[in-house]
Length: 100
Length: 416
Image (cartoon, chains in turn brown, yellow):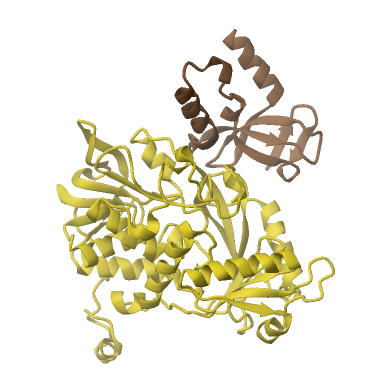
């Protein structure tokens, strides 16, 4: 697979390490928990449960042998086709703006 | 017809006219006592043991494709019970014992060959870990033999003992491990279950579960509704997709694992050998092909094919441990889709939905577990109680903190 890095251009996927579903960017906020049990459930879901779709999947890739940036790669996991690539920091900032 | 040397001779003399299909191709009935979704090795074994051990014969196996077309025909055919943790070892040892009696009980030649498996070690620390694992195996009633370099040279003289970076110091051997003709396992279980009255329904895709007042009472399929008192799902690789239809999110990611077969060679590798300094395992099939594999590709995938960096990594592992195979040419390579769980261990458990049971999360070790998995899943479906050796395989174990992490890698499925 070739990943179109937003800053560096086309890079071989072998330069990257894979973490998983980009939903992991959205960690539950302990400060906002109404009840400790709810927080436990929220963190259990966050750490262990996955949607694992067969199709379009947003996922986190780390450019370990490159510029060490985290990317959000949108990929079709049934065909290995890469649809879009963004910097994870941009995705995170955008989601914060949205929630405000 | 019972298979034996007499039936072969008799049919041979009659120009092989009277062989019957190994199993029927029935239309699905409107309802069953139990249905198993997924006609892979685990689903077929479950159906067979439900019928043979628990007397439940009004049951059906529902398969989207054809028997033998999934992961049961896409693995590297290794059987072993060399696990460490108490929650795992007893289960895999039961499975290995069932392999030993399999061919007699299902009257089918699955070519079970206990030619031994050797896990190599390359350092003092790895030797200590091998001793510990071997002791754990022996304490659970399995067999384990520690081989030093001298013993190992007698069995596998072709290994790269003098490798500068990872010299080979010995290995942990399980003599009762070995390999099995994998698709014969599917065919044998299918035939044996069919003879006991189990309906094996192929080309029938489950499109949803029938829910009535919070209870699962059957499945919607591409060939109509099929009702059942109990529904067991054994569709590893596609578990998240199928259980998603029941509204469940699971601690599973689907990943692709590649496997490779070389051209046929004269017998050279005596059993199964695994590399201790990288991820590489190899055996030789009865046809002579070297059957080998390594790591999963490492990213979520439902495509039954992988990418080239892992091919390179696997071949490097092979060259590091036995340079002689560099001369062999690769004949075939393929990929299969695995349920990678959060701790590398499987699930055999009830779900929160009454009437719905799950068998999943086999990572890339499902083949060796086939008889044990079927035995324990049948026990669960028939009695509503977990089998003694499968008690640790609960779906809620991450919530309760009782994860069964053989490798100690944490909740990162692509590292198990």
